[in-house]
Structure formats: C-alpha cells, structure tokens
Image (cartoon, rainbow, N blue to C red):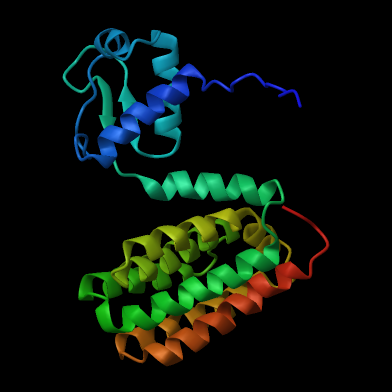
Length: 243
C-alpha cells in the first residue's frame, strides 16, 4: 500500500516571532514594564525581517500585552504591559457580532458573573469603591440625563462592583461581557417610550443594590442583580433585531 504524502504545514514568520516572545514571557524572562530591543536589533537576532517582526508586535498590541510608541525618545519602542480589559472586550464584541455567541449566552454569562461579583463585593468592597459607586448612582439620577451618558455610567457601575469584589479576572470578564452588548442595550434604552421613568426605575435598582452591598447582604444583592439584568437584558433576547 503506497503512502500519500502531504506538504508539511509551515508557520508564518510572524507566528514564530510570537511564539518566541510568548516563551520568554512564560519563562519569566519578560515581565510587564519590560522593553523589547529596538526593531533594528531584535529582527536580526530572531532571524526575521522587520516587517514580520512588526506584524507580530501588532498582534501583541491588539491582545493587550504590548504597547508600541514610535519615535526615538526614552519612551519610544515596544513595552510589555497588562491591559486585558480592552483586548477581551474587543474580541468578545467581534465574536458576538459575528454570531459566535447568542444573546441568551451573554445573558446567562452576565448573570453568573454579576451574581458572584455583588455577593463577594458585599464582603470585600472598600469605602473608596462604595463612594465611587455612589457617585455613579448620583450621576444616573441627574435630571435630564441622556441615554448615552446613563448607559456609560451604568456600565461603569457594574464593572466597579466586579472590581471591588477583589477578583481581577471576574472584573475583566464582567467588563468584556457588558461591553459586548453595550450597543444593543443603548439601542433598547433609546427605544423606550418613557425614558425618564425607565431611568428612575433602573436607578432605583442600582441604589438598592448599592445599599445591599454596603450592608453586607451579599445573597440578597446577588438575587437582585439577577432580577435587574433579566429585566432589561432579558427583553433583548426576545427582540427580533440582531447585533
């Protein structure tokens, strides 16, 4: 029986560069704050063209682990950073728009994450976190607050509570999931018949949630935030329009 040989799949050059940088991060040789050598030095060391190196650096910048500053000053060049929130939010938003996840998927993920966040925040939120949350709630209660501003403050409120829970990954995931449906939520709010009444009702829940967190009543806060999310986000699941 003859063997049918197939061409060996080769990695693209920039993928080899990515792998080399990843290996150094995993080995602890590169850490947040470290600078990479200039392109003119790094490219020949890696045995690749500067265009392949730039492509790899652009990928790393997109996923939030590198920032590149052009120029020749002391801040110029590529530096390793930790910026997962924006990167994960962008990635999830794109996959949601492409149909990788349904609104129902996002709804249930939000509920799991935020139930955990509010319950844990009741035990761990600092006074500074609670004061910042209070300011956000006051901002949402301002007379004449517009839908866009309200939506932004609403997002910040939920992400702040997740961050105050003390779990950085939960905070990042909450931010990414909330950002993925921000345009849909904004659209839904813009379509309500009585926006001032809707804003008051939503913010009454925000204020009640904050009070429960302040009083350490985590289980009740978890139940209320699920009700809060299903109230608005749940209606989006039944809407005929897509992202």
